[in-house]
Image 1 (cartoon, rainbow over the protein chains, first blue to last red):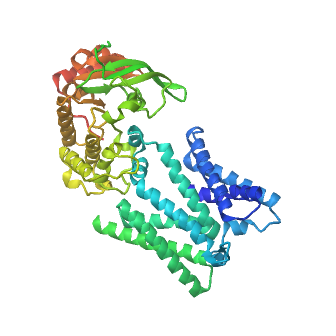
Image 2: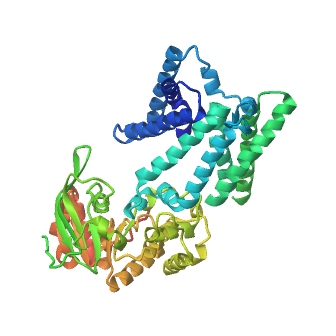
Image 3: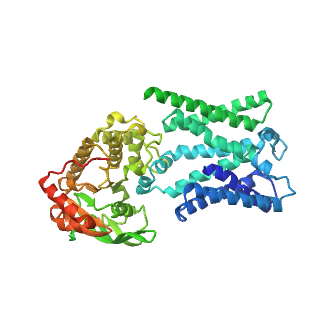
Length: 253
Length: 263
């Protein structure tokens, strides 16, 4: 749910970054939003630990007021700019191929999103590859991790930092709904299909790709919204995995 | 009664820990010797687990200091193993027995290093010692309570430490596992390791431990079991349940008490 919160609470970061830089350059937006994402996780942790709020309550409080601040800033300062809530909230995946990156010389390098998302994907993969054991031990048994001198707080913020970067980058291109659908549905589906952690990671990626491709063709077939079709496909895959899980479980017991 | 040791393995001075301004440990001061199987007993809420967590630096202390091997914790972390309460982790987590035991090797590996073949051999060897080698590929969600505890113990063994802190290793395990664990702990102590166990079951204290720490927010007693496991100290530790307790100790002397039902 933290990713859901982040996808909303980064809005003031995007607006502030825009107000300071005056440009809609994706990199500047990404930095502003990424910072706000980290601040969000800090506030959530702070309220949870020091304020003794329940985890879901502190998430709810944090993202609603940050998002509200974002909306106010947006309507007050940037009302006349092409940076409206609709485009921030429901980025349109169909328009991505039009947002191209031209080099100084004018060469067409293809859609910008590929570079931004690709770079972040690479970063995430590298961190998971090299720090698999730290992430595993702090997630599974934080008390033990601390006892052998691995900082729980550090790795928590590393993983939350990556979540907020991923969220922000995808958010800009495909919109909040699709981000949340893709952050939650594939791993939840994979969790029902396997009990091995590494298999789960790979299966999650495979499912993500499968959902995107099938969703795209469903949208073409129905001539409907791509984001909507993809979210629906993630629901379909989850339902199939759930049915399989129930069925195999019944057979065993 | 507080017995001083010439060369203490553990030295705790003036330790006070509070949750929300309510003290859980108050001015606790003691030293513990090397090469003993040491029990920590006391009523619920006496601060037994808190004491271990404070020693391991997992919770902040309001006052006092802890010295292990005569040094601060960070310098001697490699020689210390901590076994948390079994209930403190989510056993539905999608991982295998061997992966959990391999965590016992993490502190020896650098930041970006992965466990090697030698680490896997040590992990398998540790699993063998707890009688779980056949389960190495099993998912942890498919283990019984006793097997979960054995996995935690194997992870601690894989650390190859000198000093072990175990938080209620006998809680909710079957009789066979309890017996196997006790035999293993006694074997470790015979190799001059020191094992400190938070314990609940008073009737087995005499059978299991060489040394006993009795705690109820304050330190009540600390010394060899024969000297401190007395009615007087038990009453002081458990306070209100005094009459019930003296009956229990009477029964214990006669060894007539039936085995306590496990969770």
